[in-house]
Length: 462
Image (cartoon, rainbow, N blue to C red):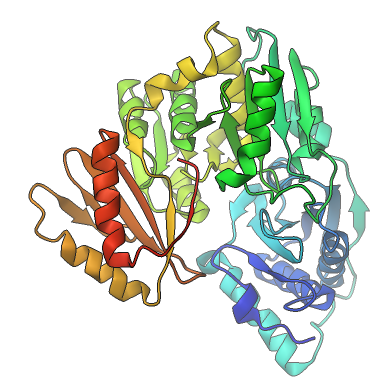
């Protein structure tokens, strides 16, 4: 099968339907191209629990070894476990996962040594060009005179130990924690990471099953949190945690079963990281709450605003030496974790903060939840540019409001702000609104939605 790479090579990774859009032969070519572009003498490869993942990962390893690279296979792992291996071993890495996408999808997240991201401008375009050339010619890459080796290595215990070394959990009181792994890789990592803590673990959907029989492994959609919220209330638990398919994102539910916004988690973790690194820089994307930069400044830190997307966050982390970064999508980045994102480390910070004091989680995060937010509203539109222009025109002369176009359109006034961005992959406009009170937020939200056509198809967690 000749894969149409324009359909599967995205801005930050490879992702598409298997075997319709790509297959093991394509994965083998990607393995060869990855080694060629990174000039790697050795790499590390891991995969999630999807039925197609072991075969694709094995094919990638064959392609890499054929060009002379020694391949360390770490087997089943979360994406942040692969980043750990890349950082600890000092090797470029490839993770086979489609994160929260449906079962028929799979993909590759690639990084250079030390978990540095590989995106369009940092190698992915070159990798794609090589694969396209080999595919068009029908020729295999020229193999090395001496092929590389393929060996297996277990990293889960070392990954868990490293995370636990980064958070002081010594004062933690016993907690009851419900965890919804969504049949994804959280079911693999959570038991090992939490086993030494004073935690009564209530597992939900820990069976590794890439067909996702219970619900999509996408906690950004509130519909996929319903089971966890009900179980937290039923168990009288202190909190709930929900991981996505590759377990690099973590969502938090309080003792009432109410979602804790990723912005509140970002502010909480930022405060803790700044206590360890006074005066440090904290990165936040432009959709996080006003409360995030406020909390950072209140605790002596320097907030830096950036575009949405992990490559932008990681670039700013490296450029500024930031201690921490957070996104509205529940990606959390740590300098002590090679500037990579790890939901598990963020979860440990929440456990440590909660367990070190007697109040419930809802009370603990109240000071970080200062504004009324819409959540991310996705509207299906026929012409993204025209609809965005209509919104821009509607707010062009608004008294006291300023605009910027760092990422889409952001309009900011004294009591509210909104951001409207076009999706790179779907005919959607994504809207986030925040205001000092619920009525103002609703008013601005409805004003913005009117020019977009109000074809609202989903609203994500606030």
